[in-house]
Length: 171
Image (cartoon, rainbow, N blue to C red; front, side, top):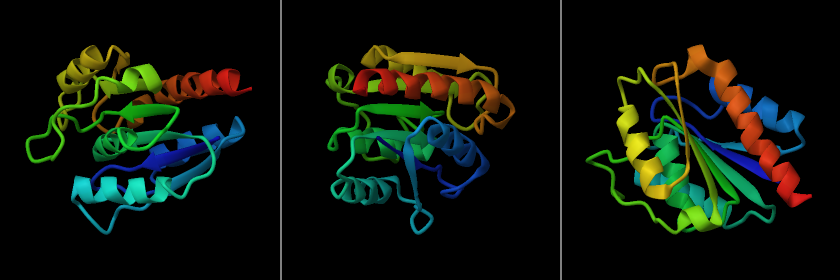
């Protein structure tokens, strides 16, 4: 199974958070790929780029997105067929973004988990609360700001648990 990472608006494909989570995925036997979106700041252009890449994929896969990458992963999941989506401080319900409502049917097909920091001053944690309530999916509100760097150990534990679910269900 493969894990596709989607980075945030101003970060890159192999920032410290993605690198750490990718290392964890690899240690559990997953293959990983981190899409480079630095050529566009438009979230919906990024969605199209991810969907185009996923159309070529032959392995089962999971989507992981941070901030704008969370939006990208979630919107792509509505058209693609991931087994799961792991969102870190996702940029949801942002006024200038094209998609404002997220498919309620995802929860029956796709495992979704959201991690958000209580002290996020970029994307209010209330957006993740709203989304998680609408989707009836797992939400982990943890100590931390938007980047979650100070909480990376907790994020890594949650991500590891998320991944282990797929090791059990796909074997």
